[in-house]
Image 1 (tube, one colour):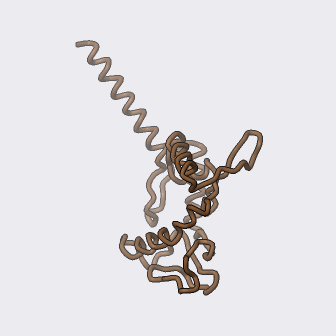
Image 2 (cartoon, one colour):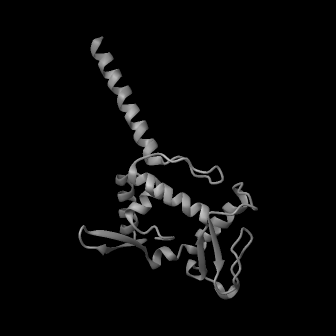
Image 3 (cartoon, rainbow, N blue to C red):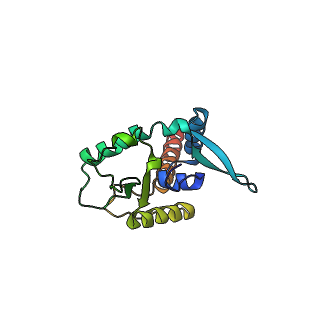
Length: 174
């Protein structure tokens, strides 16, 4: 996939999806020809998920969504974003007002050099570690990210089970 998250564990740590939901989503994307699964390790057998040409056709639309979000979603234009994109041919930083030049159409992200900014890279590493160890992390208020979703969901599910167990035992008494 993009930005170093092409393996199941990395994608799961960053999205906070449950393993079942992530498996289902990746399978759907694979069935629709958007990604390919490639073996990167035999024992145990593990896969990387690679974007296909079909998915790359969406790059121009994805760029449009990114630029729209930068303009209209209340991001501080002075703050450093999570990712800095620089157009390889022109050297221009891709900001909220950037548009590809005629010779760069159709646009693809292969035309872009991407750099994950240090603060966000540190947060991603902390998320991956927390996910692997099952503990919560506090995320900087500068980013729109929230608490580690899988851990929060586990706690919620545990509470729901406890509540439903109390209800069941109460209903048995009546």
